[in-house]
Length: 245
Image (tube, rainbow, N blue to C red; front, side, top):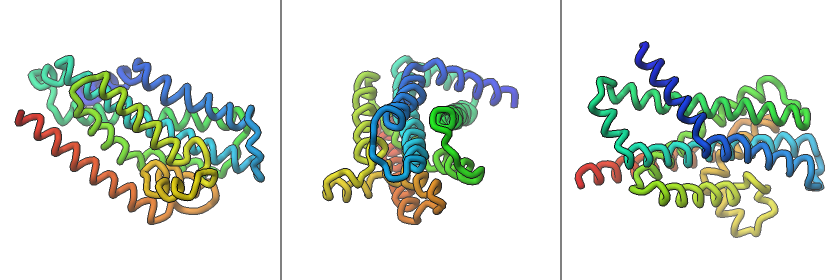
């Protein structure tokens, strides 16, 4: 147990010291939230609902980015610098190492949710019921699984700069077309149809439904599960191919 606790602490410290996590997962979503709810006039019919809606958008944007970029780039760095190989020759079991990595990532996601929810409350006085705060937070924490799998897929890349560029591009495309920056109702009809099939839209829409008093739709859940399976299969296949080579 002591070994697990120490490994979890080490993983959390490494993530907190990672500039990618601090900038993309904490600073940028809060700055965007401030701009689009305090400075830009969006002409929203219900300003309070818009502020809560955009708070969910920025929180899902944060956790999605942490899953894809922070995790993916860190896996590549560990392999390129020989850290993964070094860990295999230490007395630390690989299961404990993997558990510590996923536990640390989940704790950082929880921290992101708490910090950004807190920012929404302090900036705009976003008011939700206790159950809406809890359910939306749990949804954001659990439904990020496909993006964690996508992060491990990015982690199969051989170069850090390649992984950084690719993960950044994927992250931005998923966020913009998935409606996390702007409501998809403002998109052309073709782009709206594409958005509905993206995991980022299903992820965000689950949280948007919760703050409106609804449960995430079955369609959103099935799309996220489908992407989770695809990313896991691809990541496992590529990982085994690389081991053979």
